[in-house]
Amino acid sequence: MKLGWPIEIIGTGACLPEQVVTNDDLARLVDTTDEWIVQRTGIRERRRVAPGEATSDLATRAARQALEAANLAHEDIDLIIVATATPDHFLPSTACLVQSTLGCRWIPAFDMSAACSGFAYGLVVAAQHVVSGLCRTVLLIGAECLTTITDPIERGTCILFGDAAGAAVLRPASDASRGILAGRWGADGARGRLIWMPAGGSREPASVESIAARRHYMHMQGREVYKFAVTQMHDIVRQTCDDAGVSIDELALLIPHQSNLRIIESACDKLGLPMERVLVNIDRYGNTSAASVAVGLHEARSEGRVKSGDLVMLAAFGAGLTWASTLLRV
Ligand code: UT7
Image (cartoon, rainbow, N blue to C red; front, side, top):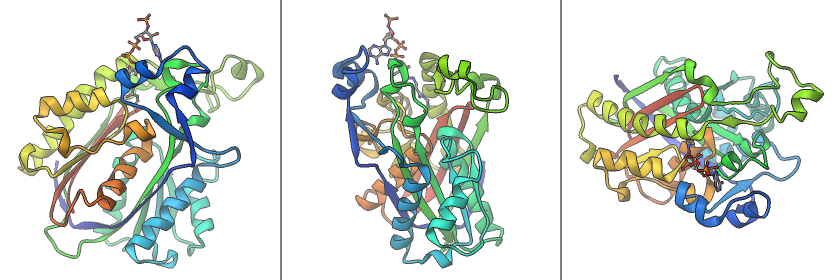
């Protein structure tokens, strides 16, 4: 959909927990090898939170960095949105915890649940608050502690996921050419159980049996998700370019959800987009779900990979199944 929303991302931040978990570390716990993981996923290491550390801790650190980069103080924020599938608690929301820790005014704060598409979904919601005039300054955070819901002895998932947070501060655009030019977002709930956590919600509250059956961990049909992701990643990037009337060649950078290097390479190959114009950090962080695109955006800006006026595409997909893409002129 062509949008033309005049917003600007004026600051970004990221937080990666200190503990590094290498493929060899995992190979000591489950039947896998560094070679298999690198070949099949592109992941070499990921980060894990320390005991007692939670999603709001990472989110708050990323937010502080984003505010500093934007040259703003916590008093300037009018709304906080946290995209996460791994909140500190069911309630209150992680966004409310971040609001309190940052020392903000009594501004609205809420969480969004769209799994790995969370930050890209959040960008639409955050931008709408800015464009409508409801808020001037929105703090959007993608934050996850996926290692806390990943079964440490299930080799199909424990190798993939890591913990991280990324944050962005949005404001009305300083010049009308900047903003969100186009975007696509959608969901297919019928395929919801391809990636899910069976127990712990209202359908199957925690019980001794559910814990023993390891139903509080994420379960995933990896192959099926892979097939969906390869096609969807390609389709949403191409369709979003078409919506905006720009060619793939005009993209300065694609920041894709980091779920599997083979998914990214295959989609980019079909798009005819050279990998030099694609942000990849999956080797260092693995799949950090809602934080993934947010951390990528922060890295792209801090490494000088995007300059003013560039066209930057964000594209994500994940549990739900959900997907979202956003074409920005930064
Ligand atoms: O954020 C969005 C959500 N998730 C994704 O995007 C994940 C998408 N899916 C994937 O990235 C891939 O499907 C995986 C990386 C999860 C798995 O790779 P694959 O190439 O699809 O492997 P597979 O599931 O088809 O399994 C192939 C073989 C199996 O053995 P057999 O049955 O052929 O003997 C698995 O048991 O590889 C085995 N296997 C492993 N071997 C060593 C599965 N996991 C591992 C492992 N180490 N960690």
